[in-house]
Length: 480
Image (tube, rainbow, N blue to C red):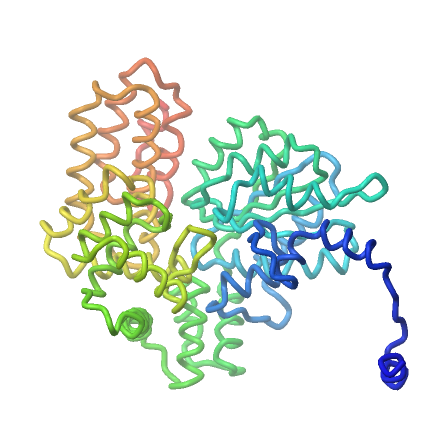
């Protein structure tokens, strides 16, 4: 009676009393609620956006720019049209690092709710558990004879996810009424395209991209981050550093210091990473700079992969258990983010920038040895990460070691089967802009082999012909 009396004095308008058994049954059918509120030991793969960004993106700054950013708003309009379309089930959004994928993923759920699309939005924490089991245990269990749910599943960073094929198959064949939104860096799009084709989802897929932001958008973001109505030399800043991530950092620097020395800002970003890592490992006898370089080269990594842990431990001169502890400290301290057992930098761009700057400080022989140490086990991640450094500075220091690798491919072309040749071409696409002439030599050698069709060469040719490739190859393009 005392409880009811207390409630009557508050602003409670409705107080529904559930039958204990009915309430228990509903809780049993909500795995996320059991985990989050009732201390269930099971860790869910599917979580709401608020939980996903709280756990995975807690160090990223998110700005609401007055009037919005057209490059992002147009993509949100596209995804809203996709959600009400009865045919397509997969929406792929790709962009260069720092161009606003995370901002897009934060924004579109709000508009989806406002538009009353009628679908629940769940983000996928790749690597937490087997996606096929999760579909059955976390999604399928929620439906009853009279209650059917509709879903929007969201997979971020698909270029480095491990279960993309299984996720696509589950969305396409599980019988769950779901649409899938995939976000990834542009560098990973060819690999995703191959997976989409392999599971026969091409006709159900819409592909879009966040384009280069306009100068006006960059200037608006700059002023928002700096909290100023006008900024001296804003046109020059937007033209010289046309990456939203760095524009935000420059704006934050201006808000505190009223200047925009980009080299100093970039150095401050890297020093902050180093200082954080050193503070986290203050009790460990570790060469932090060297360990961060190894991680920047090969992330994302699986913390349960004993071979990777062993190689990292050998490089750091510690035992494997100590290395696991170090990675756990990095994850808890905010240097790395853990998505299940998968570890990566916060954000990925920090690792890319650090990789380029750290490689510059090494001798040519040291760069080559670092590269070769991981090449046999982590080639896909290595080439993806090297390719991502394109937008953050000159990579002349990387050309000699990459040239040696491609020369080795050319000399051993007769030893590759068709599968291995396709993998080589995927890797070549990531780094061809560094060594365009040698890349063309590689393409010519592969064109003489009968087990590849011309489609296999297209992505590399397109990359070479793009402005970042800085080489004209019209005759080669004509042949392909």
